[in-house]
Length: 142
Image (tube, rainbow, N blue to C red; front, side, top):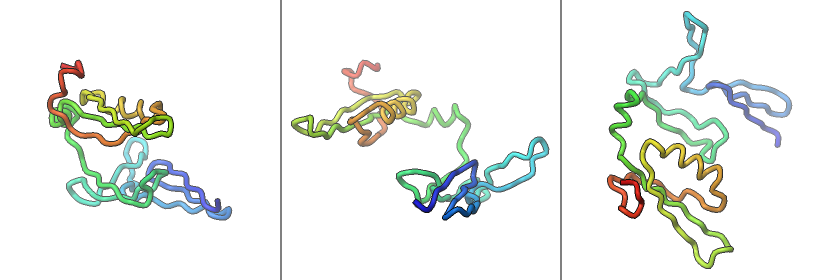
């Protein structure tokens, strides 16, 4: 392959045929910090929002993502649904038919659960995730 990219902070280093070119993400700007010269995120809009290119290795590379300032952690957590239904799918020749599983996950454990599935799920892939106000009693979560 002639081209390789490496992202550090908001900067992408692109190598093409032995030449190196640095490009900076649209949401990262160089600003002087009194303390240590750290880079700070510089939003496109005064309200802290904007759009930026997905410029790192990703299944959606080349598209754009929306960013904005978030609420403080506890306030944001309170706005989330109490549970999520995570549907996975097994669709392999080893099974006589495709199979879907529904997992009910407390909001505080969603990120860990999704990471676990992505890393260790094998043929079981994440199909979709949806909010759930009350999981079924059979889930043993209530």
